[in-house]
Image (cartoon, rainbow, N blue to C red):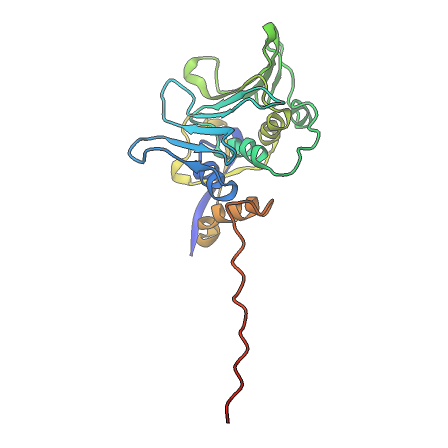
Length: 253
């Protein structure tokens, strides 16, 4: 059996996708616990060390996704937020880097992946803009701030804004670079053809293909397995050892 899937590019126009790509992966692959009320339209996940929290709530005038990290002995507290239409895969790039048990490699300047993908400075703005002029990334450092802003918009009017993200002062550089790499990645994102976003649809490149239904249905499971394999982790315990085989007593005559 096959199902239709749309492959949408550029990825920042693909729409939100499946939030489980972030939430279920955090819970099952990285051991984040949930303490939200199932009767409320929100999700709250907390990291095993109680230092980080993800909050997902449909607030019309606020970012839907907020990730906060507490201050530690060596790092300040920080916060990142993403709007409702942010593709889950871009948020997942951030949370995957956050939960990676490996020591982060030197990530360099977060602008670098964008420059390598042909993003250019614009005359009226600092920062870099995608070749199609839709996405803009800016590092704001005035008045003691150290904040990154991402705007994806088809026009300068408020109605033209598709989504916005803000990554605040103190956020580790390798997490910001994970987001800019996801923005620069030209690979299309897979979506249900019946649920493509209307805003920006005339600027998308979309192709529809038939894929095996099992391949689509188990995509999240494959993702969780891949993330869990980065480290044994407390959330994927090893199976208990098989019981020792007891020797048979000698047969009496």
